Image (cartoon, rainbow, N blue to C red; front, side, top):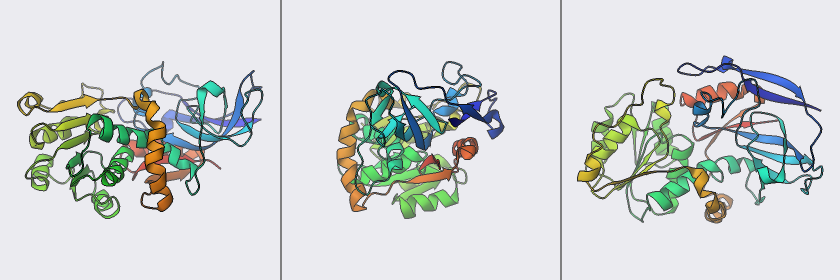
Length: 330
């Protein structure tokens, strides 16, 4: 049986391009004892993958790549799984994968919920937002929040979950006029800043003249500096990522006012979502009823075809997506 895979063939210098990847047709080996054959349905495109491109131990050249995936079992072999079961695994960037039961998670299928949600609002993206709000920032009803990269996967999930949790004002930053409209018209942010056409710190001060309680940091650098300047005393910062700095070979830009964390009695905490996988059932219990009622809509940019994945990845890093970037396979 043939399978399609995308391999990394050269490492990037600065901003990646799609020609660093190659689409390969391979013959699938015979299933080993305990493995099942999975046909992938959706593949996740994530910012963390940019760092994987630089590391041989993460993404070796001329080999299948790691990535979050949703698929169905089409050959159970001796795995003990059932044909047709929906599963999550990390053998991405390919059409088919041989996976052992201890390398996957069987997914619950909920009425009215598309499987793609397990890579967005019910997946690592949604869990990241949920952990940031409930465990790191410990959001209380009525508190105001500032979010950077607010139109991306985590930013869009933060907005929706925070509203359901009773947040006060939501302020988001993004990089284009179209995304400003997306934040206010679709995600119901109260105020949106275009950091490419506005002075970020000045605009943030105008949006929140009395400050805000929580900053969800997806960018670092100047965004973090502006947030520290305008956040209220005893505010909390949940540091998720630094997508704006992944392509720079030089040392990343740092906020120049970090000592204000002391002066304002702030708490800044970073985290990795993989350390909170035990909260998956809690996330689903909270989110699924809102998906089924229509109150919550997964925010996704979906491209079809494995052959388009490399370009989708490059576009995601450039900020072209609204919500979570996904690839749908035939």
